[in-house]
Length: 346
Ligand code: DOR
Ligand code: ZN
Image (cartoon, rainbow, N blue to C red; front, side, top):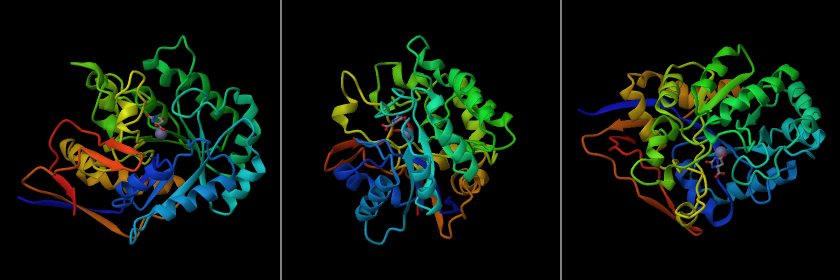
């Protein structure tokens, strides 16, 4: 029996596209299915000013396959030197849709991020005034905090104080990985939402470590215990408008993943919609998939939903996805959910 479901065309509210040959190689994996994406600014060097964002946007559009309709929603990388006026001008022109906060040292190319949160107070106040969302990488970086606890500690030590000190600042907790994150978002009546990745709905920390270390399942924040994965599944499939898809699809070439000091990131752009249909069907929530992928994000970002649609069809035979995407920068392994996928984008 063939089943199908048609959704408003989805958006990805957290995506790494990189630059150059990597951008060229992986952009089609997103623009095939997604209408828009929030583009992470952690390039080397990072996207810090409005001018940087404009130039990066132009490079993304130049790399877009002919005929694909895709709008990159640009972000700035918050530094202790960010100029609130430059940021406000980039927001007013419509160029940027959010600002990304990386605690310095938390993840890939975050060394230029924020060390002293008092130094960005002026910028955060300006953002609250103009209603520009702050996307947070929610992990503390203290050496004495266990890596599996870094999100929960961030909520108490950083996020709650910032939110209390900056009323009206719209915050997106990016890629939440814990029940603590889910509960914290649910405790807020306004100005707080969270993105959830595809891979965190599928893997827990056993997938990374049992039976040998699996570098392609390593990302940050790292996947946690099963109880946390189940809390994320419940939040994503609940239809609650405060939770929406941000894949955090983060390509690194295989040589840098399969390495003594492997990079963090799961590359899920290629098969995300197929995996999500599987997950939502498994949880009896296919009717809420559209909320998660296509409706909740635009509502929070105060953008219109997309005009187009995307149809997913469930076939009799598993869909074959490439194991790797060959890019000019090198091969990138596609995330393997560990089970066959029967849903494909029509
Ligand atoms: O796994 C991750 N990869 N987490 C991040 O926060 C950054 C990302 C990347 O840029 O590779
Ligand atoms: Zn990311």
